[in-house]
Length: 293
Length: 347
Image (tube, rainbow over all chains, first blue to last red; front, side):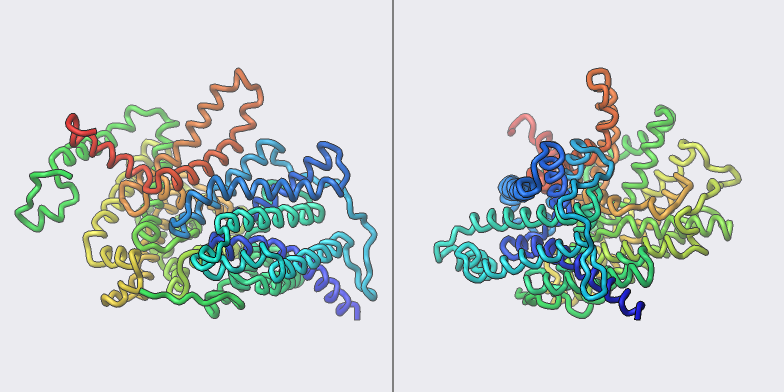
């Protein structure tokens, strides 16, 4: 019985971190869908979000309800600057070149954060409380439960926005066919900026959640690698794929970490990634690309 | 465009160095490489050896990424395979070091073949991510295959011996590494005058068209992976003899990015590019260190800024070159050469 209970608790924790992965993957998918750019710096945006929150909450002493929106807005602002300054000039270049630009960007962000806040890991000011939550008899850490709830709400909001909001529709139209979107009067460069702002803002928000669970450090961008696995398994241009993929990878990481040992976490997910690539190269829900000469 | 270069034989047309000034400069360069160790102090010799290792590995990645168009973020992992092979053979078998280095290359090539398999199914960014996966799995193997790799504490090598002399100081290592690297660069330059190399270029330019022309994608993509990993393995072997400690953390993921950055900065798909890129990217952090040393009297905590500044400059170099000079340093060199060809008649 207690074994089963333990398994249940591990599963819940896995779902919690899976929700965070989904959120990060969503930031990824959003940018890829609209602009066809793989943003490898998403992990670093996440880290930056955590540090911005740290700066506002601990540095300026703002309360959490003010610091969180500011951190998200800061992430969005950085996204806008990056899109305008680095990604726009690369329009029409090979995808690999743009991908490398984002790798360079990640390196710049890590360096800046290290320069400003130093390399030591830090704890974020607590704003969630510590009382654990029990589902039946199973124990769930309060922070993970809150992170799960927030991620679920944000993802739901995104799904509604994509469906009904004008900007969301414009974004989907751009993703489907850029030229057609242009001729319908959609401001495609505007959509690109919008996608980067929302994507980076989402990543920054995910960074605040992640940082409040595990603390922040310049190396926390590694989380972005796990999110990368999620989007590849789920399909680069699929919101549903990010959602399902995130939960699945979160569960598998939790199970592998608990039953095989912590060092198996990353290797299991990446092993899974290789298998997924061999079976379905465009992800579970991704669109197959057809090549013509 | 240079005129008056009509060729009278295929041999002259295919030659690597076509003009007399080129041969002259190359001769001077070779001479410079030979006498350099007698002029340089120990610190610069250390850097020269490191540059030789990085040039070898970057040339390998250039064959794969620059010439075949397959992006790999696993170059450092292949180097690690070579380094571990060399370490294991040196410690357990005691075989001569040149044999070990070649064996390191061959083992790395075998691993590269395996890692190259996904390239048949996926390409572009998906492949880049598959190679990230491969390097993480290899890292896991290095940590956990205790009996061969000695886990996290790694292998500590005895110095290589050549004709009975142990190669311990940098001058001796220089005279071993630079010829090996020169040989490998020459091999790469020659590769692209053969059928195999031309097939690589065809695959890069349009893989479907290449297949229609009768180039077997399976065979040539895997060959490219194998050759590139061979280069990485040999470079890793030299690395092992250079630092004489091999641990799983010796070849971090950042090192793979470093090589990709080196060929981007240098110029993808040119032999000169890989060389220039590797030299430049190895020396820039050192120059930054001089800059920081120079700033220390003004800024007391400048030393603490060194590592973050290096990280930022590394990123800025990648981004800056991609945006402003996508063809890299090699293109700058070409432009300079063109300028002097036509001087003083045209700017």
